[in-house]
Length: 201
Image (cartoon, rainbow, N blue to C red; front, side):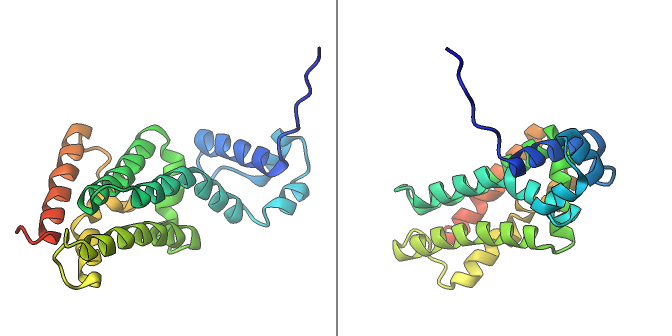
């Protein structure tokens, strides 16, 4: 019996091709005309789904970040202690960034540039990370796991103290640092920040 398959949604197909082109050529050399040609459509048709190249590249960035952001939400929702959840959130962000810059550098560069340029994609992603960290900080304070009395200072401590592991620009700058050294530094500094939040320093 012949099985029939539903056609792949056009916007997903365009994103897939765009991702392939960015990986091969980099964002600067990726063109709407080239993507349209591979998709078998006119460039005007691509613009029906994505009004500009920047819109398409931002959608591509959002697409690869979505599983990470969903994972952070799951960690924050878990029944584990707040200090453990905070460590896991930091580790998840750092490892996702580090893995991406090593294995998929041209796609990672899209996020780095969005953050550097203050574009909406970068701002949204950072806000989502901050939201999950804030939830865990609030929970830790409510349960006396964290003894830092000022929520804003507690959140600032996390992002200032762990900037090197939570900021895509810093991850890019550290790309040549051996992975085992970078992993160990992230683990040590995260532990220091958590102890400071708990009033153990």
